[in-house]
Structure formats: C-alpha cells, structure tokens
Length: 71
Image 1 (cartoon, rainbow, N blue to C red):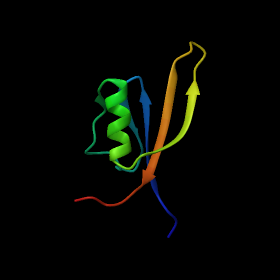
Image 2 (image 1 turned 180 degrees about the vertical axis):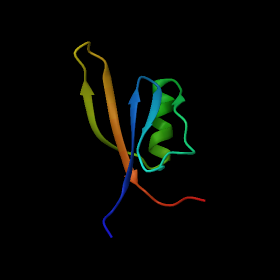
Image 3 (image 1 turned 90 degrees about the vertical axis):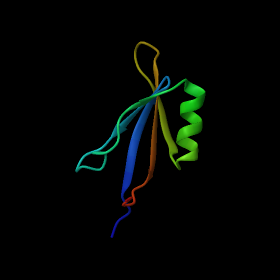
Image 4 (image 1 turned 60 degrees about the horizontal axis):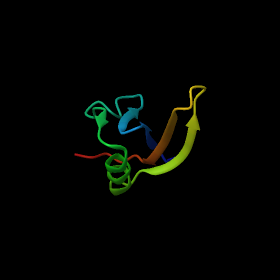
C-alpha cells in the first residue's frame, strides 16, 4: 500500500489543515504566535516541504507527515 500523508499550511502563526476524504474531520485550524506554531508542528512530527511567497510578499509554509489512523 502506498504511503499516505496529511498536510497543513502555516501562515504567520495560523495552522490550516489541508485534506480530503475526512482526514481532518476532527481537526480545526489553530492560531498561535509564529515561533509557537513552528515548535508545535515540529513536536507533532510535521516536516517542512516548501515555503511560498505570494505576490504581496506573504509567506506560507507547507508541511506533511505520514498519515496514521489515530484513535
């Protein structure tokens, strides 16, 4: 079976979970200060994939981690 991943995006201190197929049905977007958000994602096993800057100069960081069924 191929590896499945869950994804999220961090803009400033706001974490937005990205997904389909009910992967994030129990997760809600979260907001912190930027340093606390980065620490949280690292502790939760998220891996930085890419940082993108939009036309207005705002950065969005994209993360992934292996999907596993959690109780």
